Length: 242
Image (tube, rainbow, N blue to C red):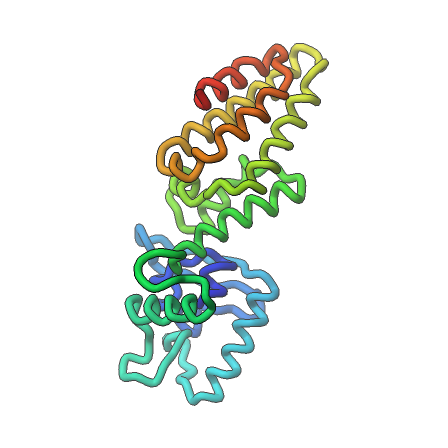
């Protein structure tokens, strides 16, 4: 359960509602049926996740669990044969506490926070691979079962590493824009406008998480050349930081 929450960004309700037939071992995919907003989606899984689920299914079979496609993927021997959201949440919280990752009480990480970690790790992977994440955000939103990228951005907790990678890409694109011909400066303006738009969205639901990094980003922006076609978006970013 923890692996699907962390490696696939699944909601806890989606995890407990999984049926045995929803996991396609041959294609390495999992089917999420009629989740939030009554949306269904088929998700490709990493090879390590597929291997872990296959190992679980072998143990599940040895335990005498039913093998019909509509039986609960995460099965137990009680009458319902399926974990409720409350029971699964309590069980996974206990696991986090035994691993000394969560103190007693309502403080510390929640199971749902693993979904946030999935989003941040996906963004980090794109930056490390040199991929511009902006055009890929709609795909990430679809994978998570969101209606649009605005909901996905709420899950984007700004970490120091993510901020550093984003600012390096931002500065690199700005520097390469310097000295281009006039008709090419539109691309630089688009980049800075995109960042300004992203910052504006982050300023809403994630302002509290982002605020400790304002001073760092402000310093990074100070190093960006304010060339023609780039200046407008740069000013918009600076205005947001003030």
